[in-house]
Length: 218
Image (cartoon, rainbow, N blue to C red; front, side, top):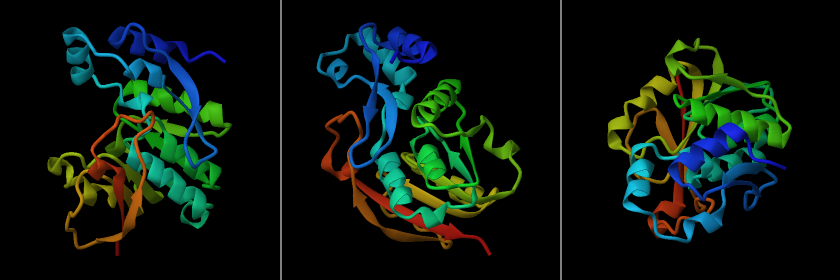
């Protein structure tokens, strides 16, 4: 099975020897096109480092929060079964795909990055599910039962998004490993789960602890 050409070409521009391979995520039955772990075992040149920082290929990793959210939905399909779901900042599409496999009526993978949308398309096909796609959350109607979100609160400047999620959906389910203790009157913490980014980036242990938050608007 060959990697999607548009994604492989984009990765090649950043890291000339890097390749995408279909990998099964630990603790799941999901597969994603992800960067080959072997490509992470060398030092990057200054130019490669610059390019990675300017245009990080986040869509070719499954980040810890996305993995936790996907596992959560697989184990608790009642969260999405028969519902209309939007995955905000979908990245690789891992949470969107998990929602579709858990029986969601409709799943929209939403991301500003066209490469992320291509990644979602390729990964949906890899897992035999159908998704819809959007590049503009605020162009979507207020029609969703649930907004799912993973790894978008890495900067506290993004915390106002917590209100916006509830402008398009009746409920929001947010997974995050960066901002541990945000306070919001509508969000309650469901718990903390452990996972690592895949392929493993050897991130600090603190980033392996993912908090899950839930909100429901009145």
